[in-house]
Length: 552
Image (tube, rainbow, N blue to C red; front, top):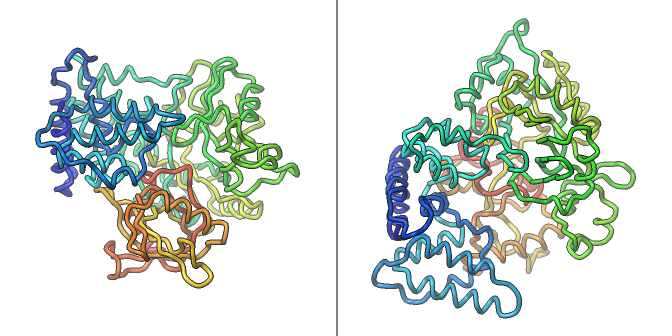
């Protein structure tokens, strides 16, 4: 398939705000990719590449190309000749370059690739490399398009994607099979193959969490796939006499981990499915010490100092980012003294039995059998007052909050299921930095005020305002280096950056505002921390921000 066809579809998708129209355009392209002559390649070789490109991503996690390499492009080609496999192979070759002379070789290869592209193709490739392909085709839209192209229910594709962890292989299987549903059902939970983790919606307090979950509707919503994606929907409130029991987990301020064990083989991945096994030998050892040797566990890793006291999130994140060269990247003291301890709150597989579709109540019973003593502390109750006391106790211990969970709900991997609701003592949002201003006065020489954006479900980001509150000197130094790397434009005062960096923002409320395009602004926004463990696609949406108007 020619790259020009993908670029044209990207233009069509960007030109409409209709999710149905986006889906139809992508589905048509996927059908053509499935029917394309493969020129001796494996059947469907183009499909996985096309799926990645329409989701705005390269298949190579890192190419080594920076923004500087995209500034001075060669003249465009007059005729479209590049195929998607040509492009994928070129980026794969660039990603594999290392050592002396690699920078020059990468620049030369990039020049050859862009020189073979037409003007429209150059713009499309630049957007892919920079992560700025503003077409509104998020992965969820592509998943729905795969379902339309294959003629199968979207829920079947979503389940296969969450089990496989990637959309491309699922799309290829569904579009090439004589029986697409059977092909999708072949994707099952495999120990050693990470699945997309279940995420939690948000509530401002325990009472609101009980209102969302207390009617016992979570299992039905999970089965239908219609649970609230961003915590904006609510279940009908249940009276005190017919409330169901809920599980309240302590929410630890660590990093999300998923652990797979098969015999002595242990795999540890982050919420973004990055393999960190070699960096966390203490977690590997803890899992090997458990009684079962066939496990998939979901939990948090928390840094604990020599005194047994949990350390701040930034130290945990730095420690988990450490490789064998820990003393170089994190410092000898941090690498040697800070131990990561696993705390598990769910089990997806145990001793040959898949548990994704089992109720949380059943999964917790198994978890207590296989993961003790490494389980998160929890309370099971139907009493909101008892839950509120538990929440207050967690805060006194210095924990982040709680997660309230429906005991009858299955594990809704890969999305914000209807069965989990997180409650924190302060209102927070995960937003994306869109730009940053140069500092003045004491902050002269640093990049200071950050411009905050919420994710638009139809594509792109919506500006919400600016803040420099909560930034200490160490953070200012870090963000100056970080946003210099992400810089795309610089007018001497405002530095526009690639929308990649997620930041957790605390705020006192949301108010209507005509000053910003989303019609809302945050009150007293302040930086809590930068989230290296989240991607821009996981940021909160503008709809989630607007939902706080009622409570802000």
